[in-house]
Each structure stands twice: as C-alpha cells, then as structure tokens.
Image (cartoon, rainbow, N blue to C red; front, side):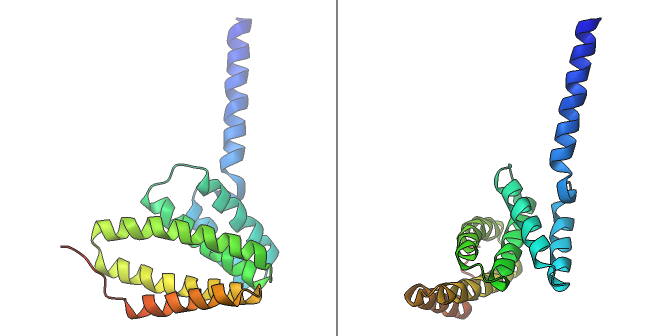
Length: 167
C-alpha cells in the first residue's frame, strides 16, 4: 500500500514538472508564441520579446522537430535576430543569425524535396531578407568584409528566384 502511494506521488510530481516545463509562455503551441513575440515587437516591448524568442528557440533546438516545428523554429530565430538587431546587441545578433542560417538550410532542403515551387520562392525571398539583416549586423560589428559577402549573396539569391527543380 505504501509503495503504491509513493509510486503515485512520484508520477504526479513528474507530471507536474513536465506540465510546467512545456507550458512556459504557452509553448504547447509554438506558433501562437511567435505571434505573441511579433505583437511585443510591434508594441516596442523588445526585452520581453527577446526573452521569449530566446527561450522558444532554445526549446525547439533541443527537441525533436518535424517540418511544422522547423518552420516555427526559423520564424522564431528570424524574430530573435531582428530583436537583437533592434536592441543593438551585435554579438548575440550575429550568433542568432548563424543559427538562423543553419535552420533555414534545413528548411530549404525540405521545401526543395517537397517540390512546392511557390513555397520555395517565398523561402528564397525570406532568405534574401535574412542575408540583408545579417549583413547589417556584420557592418555594425565593424566587419565590413563579412558584411559585403552577405550583401553580395543576397543580391545573387535575389536574381536566382527561379527554383531549379528536377520534376
């Protein structure tokens, strides 16, 4: 009897810890959190938006993802990079932009494999915007050569909006 009570207590405690861990900032639906982050940016509540974006991106990077969560991860990393850029935290913005580029490459591979031409062209347009932001971050850090490289690859990608599919 006592053993069953201890097992039940352990299970309840474990469940409570799991619920607390995943309901932080409403992370049970990450797309709603991204919308909330965008609202905070629009209201110029940048510190709160930064904390939420950092927590959500860390949570998504450390969990198993599917294509929907990869899309959300790219969105939240994009917002986090933008917030850090707006707050002039260049070093952290650079690190977030590097994470964004890695996550974006994974998403681009999935889109290319799916064969959706419209989604691919939209992803390339967002990639160009990300490269421009990263170039601005690099120029603010005083790294003009890296900034030039980001801007030139943004120009190259913007002219290459026609996807190359083997259909």
